[in-house]
Image (cartoon, rainbow, N blue to C red):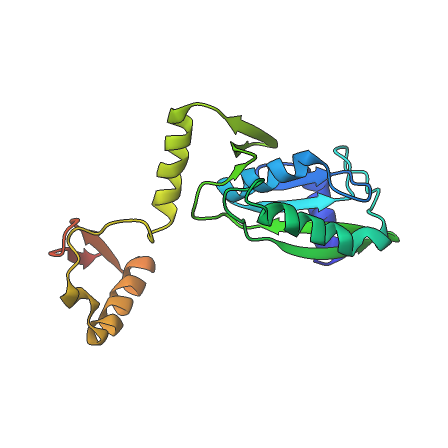
Length: 193
C-alpha cells in the first residue's frame, strides 16, 4: 500500500472494514476482537499505530517482528480462537513512522475469540450473545460460501469433465447479463436478457 492509498483510508476513518489501533510493543486484547469480527463479517484492515482520531503514532520498529509473531501465536492458539483466521501483514512507512497493517479476509466459518462470537457493525466490534444472532451469522455466511451447502438436484452427470466448458460458458453469459437463469432445479432454463 502506498502513501496515497493509506491517506485515503485515514481520511475515510474507521468503518465496517477499517479499524485503527494505537499500539505499544504488543497489540491490545481488542485487536483480537476486531480480527474475529472482521473474519465473521466481510473482512477488513486493522492499522496498528493509528489512533481513533486518525493521528499516526506508529509502532516501534524493533517490535514489528515480535508483534507479528505474537499475533500469529494468539490466533493459532485453540484456547483463544476456535479456528485460525487468515491474516496478512504489511508495513507502511508514513511520515517517518511505521504502521503495521493486518488484513483479515472474511472466513467461511464462524469464528470465536475466547468463546465469544464478534461481528462488525459500522465501526464497532459487537459481541453476539443470542442464539438467533449466531444463527443469522451462520445463514449469512452460507449465502457467501458453497462448500457446506448441499445441492439436492446435483447428480454425477453434472460433474462430467466434458460439461465443465459448457457450464463455464453459461455462467459467464449469466454473469455478463446476456442470459437470465429461471428455475431452481436441474431443469433450469435460460432466456435472453
